[in-house]
Image (cartoon, rainbow, N blue to C red; front, side, top):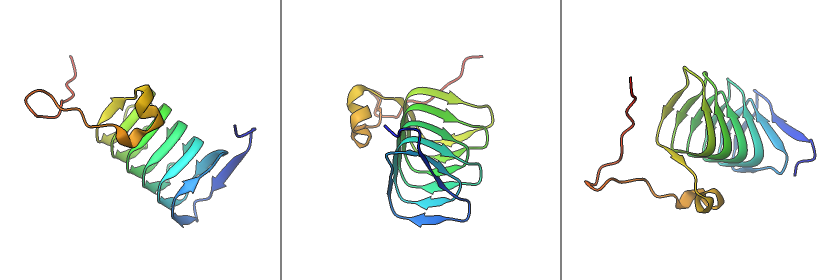
Length: 132
């Protein structure tokens, strides 16, 4: 594990390329690439264009890409465009997510890119409906 250490990517930093961290990661800057880490905290002004794979993630900024996390918290300031795979999920009122949500199975947790989109018998993707 990370042993209590963490890395910070400040608001003035732009990274073009993938990030793999064994430590916890706090991102306030802009990332153009995939992120793989133990724990991710994303600041409100942060933007990530790429996939996120983390044991836990707390997202407050913009994400364009798929997200796979065991423990996922989507804060009200988050704007996500991409599919979301999770074991436990919390979404604050006001958060915006454009994409599909799917609870991970043990196989998907190990390899999230292998997750196939759900399709109903009539060939259409399932739709979310809310009860009143």
